[in-house]
Length: 136
Image (cartoon, rainbow, N blue to C red):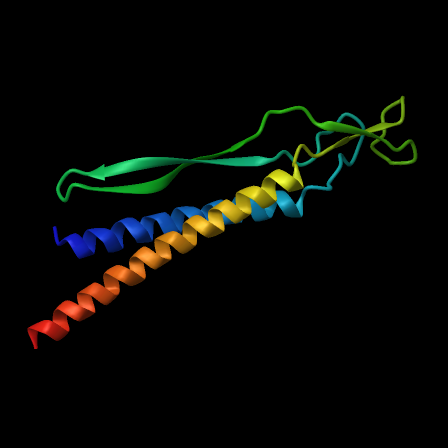
């Protein structure tokens, strides 16, 4: 396979994977302050994303893809709010297990990884253009 096409393929798969990661992080942040609606009910549970490497045996190119989007099984926080409709008999309400600080760190990391892949994609595109200019 053409080495420049391999770079484009790898970079594009990285951008797609990080785009999916940003979607998951955005959903988590949007639901970070959610609570249960009724006593005994669970609030929004944080989502996690897992990537996997896929090797195309014909071309020898390794790309990254989303392996799964799962739920974080960590415990919910409890907040004392006796007037809330979902408060239990002691006045506590279950609150989502999303940490906005952690999600913001994930968002920044995903954005930087996306940008690195985009720069690689652009560099390969420029190299291909320079090769075509040399061949004229």
